[in-house]
Image (cartoon, rainbow, N blue to C red; front, side, top):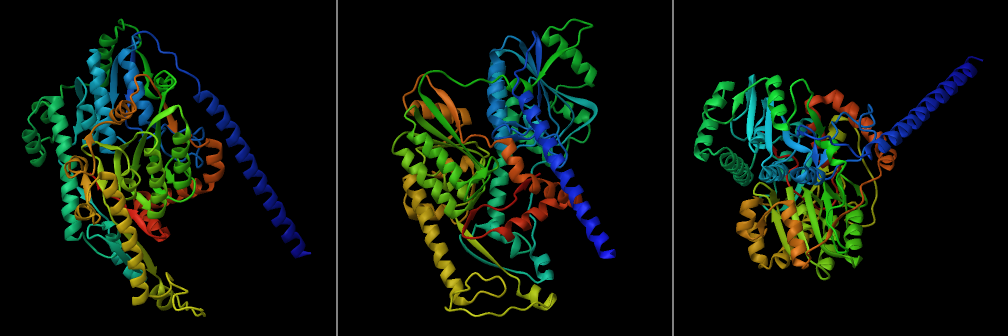
Length: 588
């Protein structure tokens, strides 16, 4: 009888929990559907409005459609983001919108890469050609925030605030010591001395090769940073460098003395200035519209029957479908193929923002670009990063556009095979035994060290993939294999250097690439269409809801250490030959 009640209670508890879970799912779907309907509504813009540009939110390649974004666990704890595509369109539209009188730029700590920020700065500078003003204000400016704010007509800082201006640094995390303590050996095979993605697992500091390239690309990023600020603020670049080098901006007044800002003001004073710029009378509230709401009014770009297709390749490269934040070879290949077969599409722009990934998946996408280029012009536009596999998929384009601070190159491949024998046997007491029909039947086994024969086989495979990689680049860039090999070897290049050595063609924005594609196709009037379709948010929730809940709790437990956990998880999950740049190259 005791067991009976125990099982009865367990069954009732299971039924209750299942009911609760089903209720939550139904609730989320209903709320999501309502939110989705609301998100599709256009926004009414009043006369004499101020466009409020909040750039502390995530700026992704495309605006995420996530009606569950504000729900706990399901949507995560990320702020609502906006796509660069919609952001640029909205700023361009505001330039000629009579209802928009000025832009109020608010940014403290932007969530975007430097190439993305430069795209936004370019759009803001173009907006000023309308003679409408841009006012920037913040209580605190990080270096990235100040880089964006420097495009404004006036930059204001809170009198008790702070402006960070100290130069760039890049810090890499190394796991060799941790792996040794737990008894895990990372067996690495690679092609290219600069292929540093493996170094965190086999070294405790940067190799000389990696230090050389990190120094070069951090210096390149910093040079663009200083050059753009100097030009916008009419200051000497060398003077800015000296200010940062000596850490001279320690108080808000220092920033004003060095003419890096235009005034120290409180928020109420900013509001009064915005009232004057927007024509708001005393006693009235400012009419404003957020960039997120304003972007909802974006319509299809261009006119006419002819089209230019923009294909977004964003995230790490893997086989399969992928999603909006991960390049799946099947999904992206299908999108490229669709654009190729559509007779109304006269040119294609491949927008790449990727650190690479699977070499095989990269080759699958590369093949579709090659086939498309035979039918119509293909222009590649590289964002914050288009390295290793990210470069692989774009190297066959007719022309490659980069920003000066784009990170690209990293032409090389590697493989990592963990050996858990010491952990399993000596620390956990677990042993393995078995039979096999061939000498290499258990090649790539992770419960023992590689043999010399296995290492030789895998190295040959990597050599073959690398040879194919540099061959494809050489053909696409019309260079010799020997030359590509000399600038390859896993070496990472900054955008300006990539143009000089022939890995890219032009320094130019995303819009410049689109205009170039249209010009090459001899189009005067055209529409812009975007592929692949944004993943349906409901399907995304059903597919990824469990993973999001896991991520939520892991972030809560690990805090700032979550990024370290993520790096370890990535490498342990990596299989096959990889064409990837270093996992994390964080610029501070």
